[in-house]
Image (cartoon, rainbow, N blue to C red; front, side):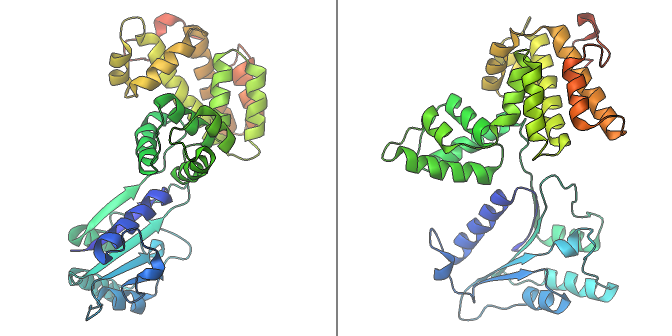
Length: 349
């Protein structure tokens, strides 16, 4: 049954998935939307009950298959503008879902703002009906600290763009541009123009393309270099544009991995550390290069300082910038532990 529910905060991948369905069903290939008849590809934005039922009951005639892209977050998400269906209407929608024609492809979408924790309620009858007759897929945006997950995706994007780049350049792209796949795709288009007619992406081309993503990685590196005052300055700039939780989440995750990497580096290879901690081996090797500059005790102090900073901010005991300053500059901030506190599993992590 050609019924889908796509939801999540990674809009770029979600839209690509819809484009793939449209191209496969309607034979669009690389063509533009203009070349596809509006009789075959139809878009609705949170339609009312009647319009939704009409779409689900649509029957193709001489014009071929139909793809309906229906934004339906007001049906599936708890919002102030949620579409209200009574029991009878809900039953009619469910019955219509059961009877969708094999030549009518229904793509229901629930785009979510990045950082919003909303999700479709899997307990609802409508959700269960879609799950029964079709497929449900979540599209989750990458976080800045998930560099090891972004690398293979970016590598595929580079190949599709007809370009080439080694891992060090791919990492630089992520750090310069950030984790957003849409931003990365835009950057690749810009880089392609910069290096034309060449195909190999250079570091200079990446830096020329520019981006804001470098800041959070720069903060991380400044801390590892012991340049805490400079790190606080960069954090203050980021707080003008980003929520403090985004910065904290990245640093907390980053220093957890760095701590584990530091602990295991005495007895494991980079391959074994990657497997043990769920990281990419290339990322582990890059971390090991930086970890020689900082002691294990200092890593623990910073990690606990960040944890206490989060606690104080959330409880209103300190403003975000002041909490970050204390976490990095105040040696007594957070409870300092000795190396022995860390067990095999990274107990203090």
